[in-house]
Each structure stands twice: as structure tokens, then as C-alpha cells.
Length: 429
Image 1 (cartoon, rainbow, N blue to C red):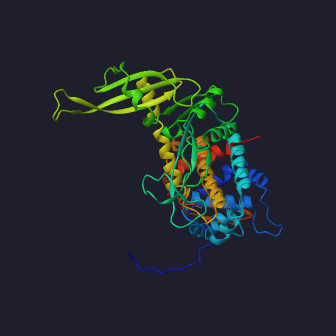
Image 2 (cartoon, rainbow, N blue to C red):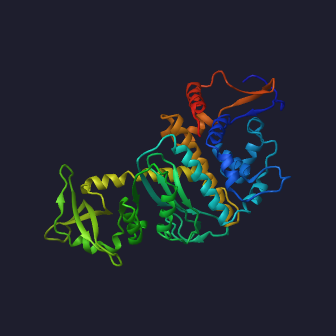
Image 3 (spheres, rainbow, N blue to C red):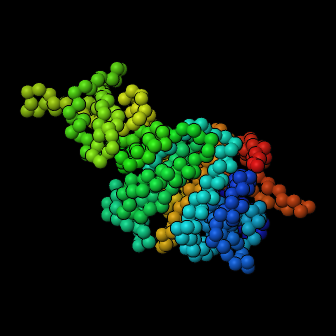
């Protein structure tokens, strides 16, 4: 290596040049204005920044890769981005925490309504007549005694305090339609009907048909009643604990053609407390034959069972439910790559607002890629971040005009220009 010296004299540098395009997109859909109008959490006229600006700063910090409140210092030191976004002043990490601690339940509802309004603008440009909603819950383990962190369902670290958010994703766009930040003691299906009602309120009006998938935590008669009242299609995995006897008593198992060791059955059943019987579909897979000490081999099966109002064959139903696994990837992206649940304070509603802001940052990225880059739409946040956001550049001011200068050897110039062109063509009434 050649001998060199170090100087700290360069100005208006950034390592996150791609944030400018996400900022452009946010401006296009009017997100900063929507947040400013929706959030009633106002600051004094002499305040250095509004709450809408604070939320946008956090979102851009998360998009740049911040995983903890202290990481926002990196964005604070990014003078190129601050110049382009017009952030003359930028809070430090402790100030972010204090500002978010002002959020209460009503303010979190306003944040959710702001995101729903922004979604309506996005879906005015592109939409699906039928969408698939994947409902799920996730556990966010914590260390310490944050408000609302309680012992509950935690398959990885039993007994650890945690939060237990409820989420709903749209399979066709990968976006998170709605989320509830909940205490760790909340059972998976707690409030499922009310949550689904709120999901339906947030669905763009152009959508005519819903298909809802969920795991066994949402196997609940009241939820099925609600979905049927809306004429929605559903496919929900069954809790085997209460249905084992019904499965064992089935005598009409049919071999699945072309599938060795696979048998299926369809039957009608009315669970305790239900108003009527419903269609159940079950699959059993031969996993072993027990022979030791037996005159005749005893087959050992793995069972899968679903309740559904779809008319498809059992194997089709089984494969259709298997596609729900992609929603677990999106949850992992939100938690591991978009800081949902890792940026925290000691206050519950502050953590809820931060969680929602992180999800909104994820949705902003998904929406932009959905509308501007079909190829990049299917990539995970870290991949998009690596080639599109973490881009070194300098901001040059000349004749009252700002110019963002990227490296002449930037390898993704074509993709960048395609997204820029698509962004310029986007317009919203």
C-alpha cells in the first residue's frame, strides 16, 4: 500500500445517496404532508423540527440501516443527505427517545391512518382486484423491564420477556397492511376479529375480493363468522389438539395420485361453540412403520389439517397454504433488516410508534420498487440497501442548484437511472 495521510476537510459527503430517491417518492405520495396533517402531536412554533419530520428522519435512518437509536448519529453526521432533505438541525439519539415518548394510543392510531392514506395514493396507480392477506404474529424478545414487555409465548427463549405484535401482509405486493404492537402476554388470536376489521378498512376500495390465510393461532370461530359475513375466502390451519379424535375416526382417506405415502380426506365438522359446521381438509403423510413387537406393522403419520371455504382439492389446498411461508420471510425482513422491534425506549406507546414507523419505512421501500422497478421488487431490503441506498456521493452547490455526484464507476447506473425516470413520470392527483 502506498503511503498516505488523512484529512477531514471534505464537505457534503454521503454514503447513503439512494435515500434521495426514497425521499422523492415519499414527497410524490405526499407522505410528509399527510403525517403533518394527521398527527395532532404538535410542537411549539419555535421548535427546530415537527413530529412529522421526526418520523421521516427515523424512517430514513432505518432505511439507511440503523438498528438502534444510537445508530441515528450516523445519519446526523451525513451532511450530504441533510442538505438534500433540508434538515438544517437533526436531533440526537436521546432527543429522538424523548420525542417518541410523547406518543399515546391515539397518536399511534393517527400514524396508522397516515400510512393508510399514503397507501391509497400508491394503489391509485396500480392495483389487484383480488388480494391475499397473510395474518401472523411474531415474538420480539427484550432484555430489561420495558413497559408492556411480559412473559408469554416465546418458542426460542421460554420465560423471556417480550412483545407479541400482530401483522397482516398483502401477498401480491409484500407490504404490511396493518400491525398491532402488543404486550408479550397477548395470545395470538386476541383481538383477531377487531384486527381483521381494521385491515378491511385499510384495503383500497378497488379491491373486490379477499383471500385470508393464517396459521393455527387464528383458528377461531368468531373470525370465521366475520370473514363469511364479508364473503371473503379463507384458509386457516387447524389446531390439532381439539380435532385429533375426528381425524382418527375418518375412514375415507384417499391416496393422492403420484404422491407416495400421502393420503387426503375432506369432511364437515362443527367445533364446540360454533354456529354451524364447516369444510375441513386433511392430509396425512406416512413417516414410519412401527414393527418392533407387533404382528402387523403400525403406520406413523404426520397430519396437516385446514378449515376453508375454498372448493379446491386437498392437495391444492395444502400447497396453497404452503405459499404462506413467504410472509414469514417478510416478518424476518422487518425485524432483522428494518429494525422493527430493535429500536426501543422504556415506554410502550413510544415503542409502538417506533415499530409502526419502521414498518412504514419498509412499506415505503416496497411501494417504490413495486411502482418503479419490477426486477428489484422481489429483492430483500438488505439487497436493495447494498446497491441502491449505500451509494457514496457528494453534493455540490452551484448557481443555487444542488447536484448529486456519484462515482463514474458506479456499477448500477442503469438501474438507478431507470428508477429515477420512473419516479419523474409518477404523478398523483
